[in-house]
Length: 101
Image (cartoon, rainbow, N blue to C red; front, side, top):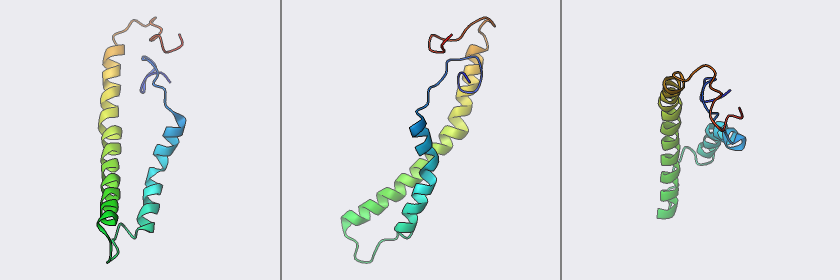
């Protein structure tokens, strides 16, 4: 499929290894929460350990926000923009120089 979701634009090339990793992040964080007992600090946790757990918790929340924004806001806007831009192209337009046409 060319473009983001249509057959009009340039294809976006995805790194399949990154895509596979991106699909596995929820299970990786679930495992991290299990190992850390939901980021619960031991009673005698030092400042470095406290910072690590805080950072892991923040990273997980930030990644959830990032994925939500990308999937539910930005992707839809990019498809709409692509449709507006490439929807105005003549029907015999073969795509961009990267589309292999």
